[in-house]
Image (cartoon, rainbow over all chains, first blue to last red; front, side):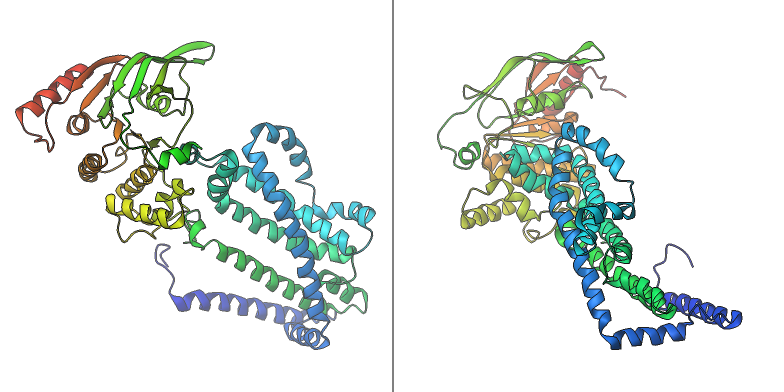
Amino acid sequence: MNSMTKPRAWESFFWPIVTAGLLLALWHYSVALTGTKVFPSPRSVEKAVAELLHRHVLWADIGDSLRRVALGFGAAVFIGIPFGLWLGWRPAANQVVSPVLQILRPISPIAWIPVAIIFFGVGDRAAVFLIFLASFFPIVVACVGAVSSVPPVLLGAGRNFGLSTPQLLMRVVFPAALPQILVGLRIALGIAWLVVVAAEMIAVESGLGYLVIDSRNSGKRYDLVVAAMLIIGIIGLALDFIFRRLGTIRSVRWGFRDAA
Amino acid sequence: MASTEAVVTEPGTRPKLRVEHLGMVYERDGERVAVFEDINLDVSESEFICIVGPSGCGKSTLLKVLAGFLSSTSGSVTFDGESVNGPDPRRILVFQEHGVFPWLTVAGNIGFGLSKLSRAQREERIAHYVQTVRLEGFEHTYPSDLSGGMKQRVQVARALAVNPHILYLDEPFGALDSITRVIMRGELLRIWQSERKMVIFVTHDIDEAVQLADRVVVLSSRPARIEDVLTIDIPHPRNISSPRYLELRDELLKLIGLAYEI
């Protein structure tokens, strides 16, 4: 197929379904041919999903995971965006803070788990703290970059119409930076969803991450493990989809040429 | 404070722009580079001035100083006796391109400088200037869906909406195709004749200058000085094949130092 031609409507559904079907078949026959007793087949995973849905714990686990992400990610948004805007606006401040950020940023949030447990003990707050950390740095970095790439012409126009600095930040810098900030938020949310699962495996006793580790520890139920993994994947995809939809809002669409 | 004055200008005042011994020098690698020096110019109310000169001569820098975006290193710019320091809604600079706010609609852009007005007054003024620049029907369109010429119309309307004393235009049609440029010149003249603002227009296009200006200020190459000021004594609408037009055009070419036979 020529890369210039747009795929037809049915093709955009058809081929992904074919790929998924082939993978399922590969999975099914691999399990059947090797005769493994440990790794579950697609059929048993399907049953495991049904079992999880019936036991009602699943909804509580999903709710716990989403709540932790909402709290940690939300706090990172509320603190990270103003902080990042300020750093981007004041290059002098950025020079002071940037080295510290650059050292903290590459540290995996997982490495913070022991520290989080010292600070907050085993429980919700430790998990929320980890998610906060995981999303805070990408948000700040995205904001700094977004602000420093606001075209000087637009700042000049804003000043020309008599805006004070706070007005300029609200009415020019923030809207000009918003498309790039949204990209940063989307990346941060993706990381937050990765981290919540890891955090729940260690720091708490509920949530989807706990479901995975608990299914393994109590009776080696690998069908439940894989079922939980699938659910984690689907929710992550849904979160990403929601964020991608934000890019089609009219006042930010100019910044997302390919999504428009 | 300044912007309140801008939207309620006293009628009957006779503001005037005075530029005296204006000079600009900056340091680069320890060397002093003069951009322009000893610029003297008086502009009266509702006069249309074009500034032309070789590319890179500092026309745009001069305009930014006149508009208050940059400070000169010597001399002064005064308007009605008040010295110009800093950007101000009483003098609006229209940029060559990318000057409209992409997150606002046409109406949002035009109303940008009107946040101190009441909602009804703002809407009324937006509607008026949408009509002035002939963008009726595009009020709720975003800039990404507009052509280059339409974006420049939005910039001009946004500038006029705050009722400034002076409109500074920095090669506003420079990024447009040649047909759109000719149309936009006609549009600008029409608007200028109805609004009677002081206009200072930087261009590197000789024809543009002779077609638009009351007086053309010719700058030399760097460091720029005023080479000459040419009065275009042809009434509008100007016949661009009249002998007087061609004469003035030739004179301008000669002043810039270009041979007019290729």
